Length: 206
Image (tube, rainbow, N blue to C red; front, side, top):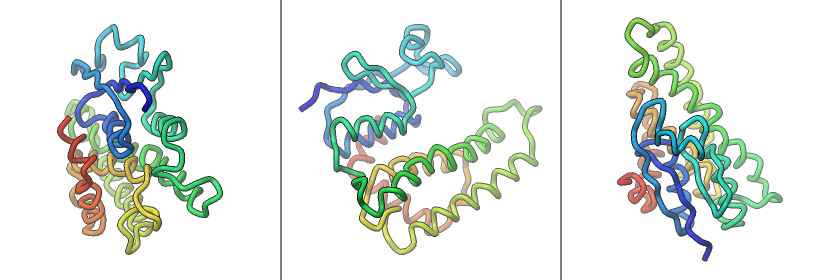
């Protein structure tokens, strides 16, 4: 069993992806909970870990890294090869990588736009037109996900994978952004399937 990985964490942040993965894999970890200081999470000391004071970051021995999906790939490649991902010669490997990165590359920016327009920007800096665009765009990208899901429980026909963790976190963000009109019944069913997993129940309380 490897030594515990330190995960720098804030509730409801992308560090949930890393913790969820570690729970699913049964790997040891320690949590360093950061002080909530918008724009400067963790304060000056944490800047040495992540120069932008964002989460997540991990420390594995002397190695420090950030970017949630990159961390997921690192952990799986180093400590859990063959788990929660198809092998490179599997027909699902390409689609797996696509959907693993879809969460952060396609879903997250649109949802973040909605959150800034609805909650983070001062009223005088908000744009109804931008929010309307984000609503339409989110409906479009969730439509892609709905098509991929089809009649199976997870994004891959072979079952649950790290791609579902990447996407699942973004569905939490969509709920926080109050994107209720864009969350179809099929997407809601998928969300409920993901959040019925024991690992999610553990991480959601952190």
